[in-house]
Length: 148
Image (cartoon, rainbow, N blue to C red; front, top):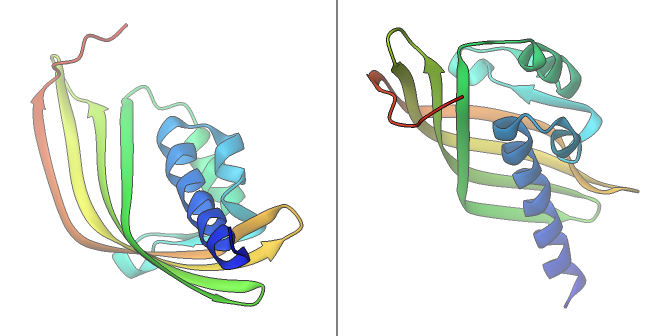
């Protein structure tokens, strides 16, 4: 396998560490996505600009309403320039929170990520991720999953 193909696979792997780490609240996966000073910028959609650690701390706080999240990545385009790279990808996300009386408030949405990445001694890592929301739909439905 060529070095460029391996780099592309490793870059996409770093991007997936973000989604798996976030959705499953597996912060050891989350850390594999970013450099230690990595930034997640939600300001294009009206949110916060935070470091990796600030966002992890905020999302690690107990939230009894949180049920699930799932982020799917696709249409990824990677451009490598030596030890730096940029990547564009679409995402679709689903989240769920407990509502009242066996109901779940669901948020469906989609948009794009614009990533800057760097090759580090530990592999490719995201240095900055900008998040753009293209659509969002919030609705409440009956919870059809049996939960503990």
